[in-house]
Image (cartoon, rainbow, N blue to C red; front, side):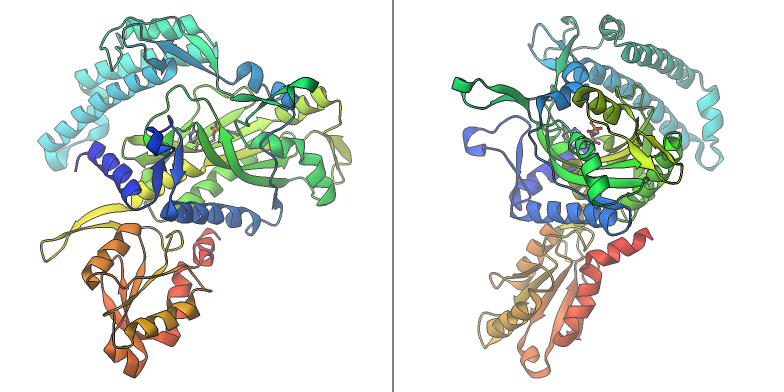
Length: 513
Ligand code: GAP
């Protein structure tokens, strides 16, 4: 299957089975805003639970909060978002379409990378076993040409980003002859900065209103509560505060489904450390976070770190964890060493001390911060992409199956009476009523058993049980495994433990130790 086809199928599957709907669909939708349906919300909640438990249960020095979305407007002045949370945008004069200048250049670089990889793939096929890839990359004239072109553009791009040189970015677009994908022309405007924050008014107009922002990140809610939590929780540095919640950005390029949204959700941790120790902790959290992703079993080869070309205004080290999406390796999580920037800025703007007295060092200081920040929606997309499969069966039929990790699956067990008579539905409901307190169960008696299996495969239910006439005599049911499609008879009394052990979040968390 073509890679783009896979992506299209995931999008339509998400809609068909109640995972993700376009927001306000009956009004033709709202750009880059999505709703989660009955299956989606369960999967999303399970992803959030996996993250939350992995932080608050697995580390004794991490606690959570839930701060408000609205914050005092000076928070965003202090954090630098009012002045510096910008994307460089450029418009095509013919199509009137707006693009991010940096994304146009990154896509151009990715095209050169593709050309290099295609050359290597061709050579691999040609030379077979004896192929020395490293040598070929270093000596083949065509590849060397592409590589040199790439390195030159890349160096200019990096410099322009770091210098916030908007004219320099535009010149790269002109020099590389990058055309608008819609109009095909190179008739570009100047590059301008565009602030990504949404704002609104708070208060009644008669008393005068205040301009407030919808938070573009969760982190600031943690920073302003740093001392509240440290004091009331008697926390000692190093310690972490986590929070999950909505964030809002007026993205210029909002596409690729739930990958880049205007309203999305983040799971963030700020880890407070003594000054000078932040880079060690940065490495520590890189390793911990990668372990968290790997534990899902999607294959270590599908993850990579990508160090930032241009640091955010607050960071002294930054990397992304990228996952191989159907449209290439893409950022799912950011890990940033944010220095003491945020706390120092809040001290300056609020006039309140943001210092911690360290009893071991016998001195006060503003802690440094290492942040891990993962997008729930991007994580959701990566889980769907990793799990979606189409399989040819022995009988010639095709089945669509979501091979979700059992702990994340929206429904853990489908309970299916073989027929709708002879006391089988009653027996099935009896099982449902005893297991529904343990994990999410789904009762289904409509259609043939084959059709019901297919429906459960499509939403990723790891186990189905069938209640047949024999069940009434021996109290045994047939358990069918989603992935192997193997079936075995087990006693109803054993279901709670046999299935419970495999679907419980604990079994995933245990992989982290
Ligand atoms: N507090 C740091 C921060 O917000 P970020 O790299 O801008 O850092 C962190 O965002 C994560 O939030 C990203 O790795 C991504 O998963 C998610 N994210 C950011 N913008 C997003 C958007 N427009 N749509 C969906 N997810 C987004």
